[in-house]
Length: 317
Image (cartoon, rainbow, N blue to C red; front, side, top):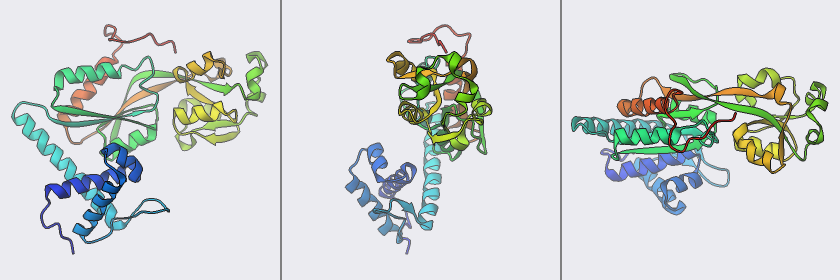
């Protein structure tokens, strides 16, 4: 029998632990995010299941898997958290103050792009919103960022992935330069660019992004033999450094490895591309006022006609 005839503060805490486990795909990642031990986290889940009267998930050597009841509780819990946050925001606005938490998800390596002015945007947001608003910034693979915005677990995203999802909109805020690279372990590394013919290039296994391949590069790479799959810049970097594949990387990501002789660009005249770094948002959602403010700060910080920002550097891409 369902024992939650009333939802207490304890229930909210247990539900948040459960939702974090689902969001992170298991106990280990949730443990790091919540800063509690795995045994405590396991106890939270067990207590919640006892209070609800049914099992939420399977866990063990086979991994973590939600039961149908767990799926329904997870969705209901997310709706509850949204309602609580909306209430906090509304109360804050009654007192003419901003309060709450805004979640921004960022694709890996975007922050280190010299053209990225995210720190300046966060500074602008802080000056306008104050300390009663908490920012939560997370890094991940681009399609994960889009998924998080689409399902409402994040408010805004910064990514280069051009995967589309329902109920989200995108806005290009700056460009990222990418090139094809090979490592010192690859046969093409020792050849001059003039000796790397399209025939040779088309015989080289290519590390791609699967169904997430960017349209800016797919027209060129579709003629290359399919190699490994790397989801995210760091995954691509590891595969390319191994010598197994050639593959695309952001120029700023590859630069340190080019300088120390571990990577080289392959036929920049053929392979260099510009891809858009996009601001991803939902058409509607909680914290509308705060999200709109952060969105405007991100756009403002990347506007080309603004004066140089603190700590900015020229983008050589």
